Image (cartoon, rainbow, N blue to C red; front, side, top):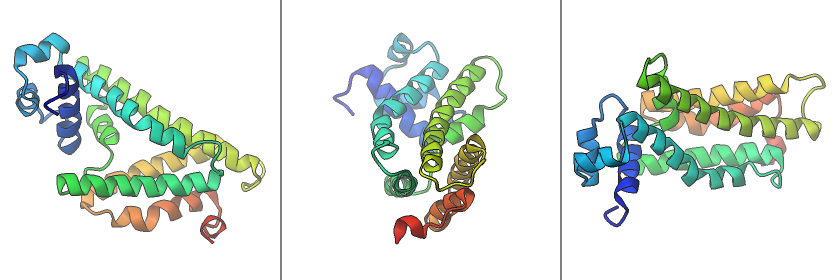
Length: 207
């Protein structure tokens, strides 16, 4: 991290600290100390902590969107996409446990739920969290449409509803994993739950 420019160092540190704790308990002073940056330098790059948090969300997407695009690629059969994204989510969670010593869940879901209902500057951050969350919903919608196009779903199924149900189920699984500090729920139920929502046997993919 020492070799990164000041702005990038602050963004990376904010992602680490806020992701492992929460937005309200991590101060600008703590971020600056962990990043090895003077407070004056912080305000040179970011007018407020909200602006830093928004930049951290943007950086998170920039860092991970290549993986998501690959996992949800139309070149991958849609049922296999569902399996691969579940495996990817569990793998990423295991990596975070090794790094942090506990389950931190989905940083975006944690931040978004923390900022929900905030006024003023907080509302701006909450809005960015909602926008980011909608990106994931678009991925699920695309995959569900392709599953329908391949004839796996019943005629007349509400595809948007199915995508929303999958999206909220996955988010809930990650929150429960964080609450219980255990990845058991993800490993046991994530894949099965998605395929149950779709009404498709997981054996169609894993056999």
